[in-house]
Length: 103
Image (cartoon, rainbow, N blue to C red):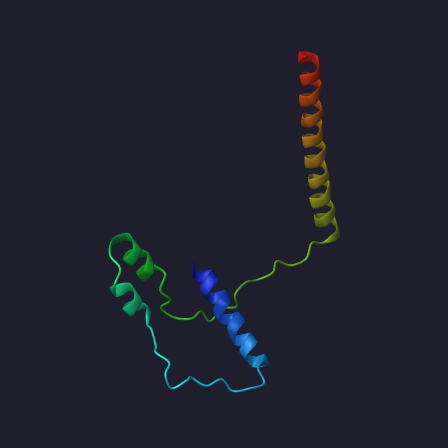
């Protein structure tokens, strides 16, 4: 859950940089804090609400992208993928052959 909140925090901050206007809070707006929303709840609902509260925003980026494959690593990955697909196709063929023989 921490990663979801971090992602949303960074996403909204980046989106805010694209805005061309200055948002203002309407004078009739009412602020709701998580504690207020959790007060009316009991038991499991309250515990889940309290557990999911964000204490502090994260200083790290929302995610890290792994480095790209090198040529041999990519080829190994593609070979494993192709072998897996061939294995599943073999199992399918064997299954349908056994069905034909059973009829």
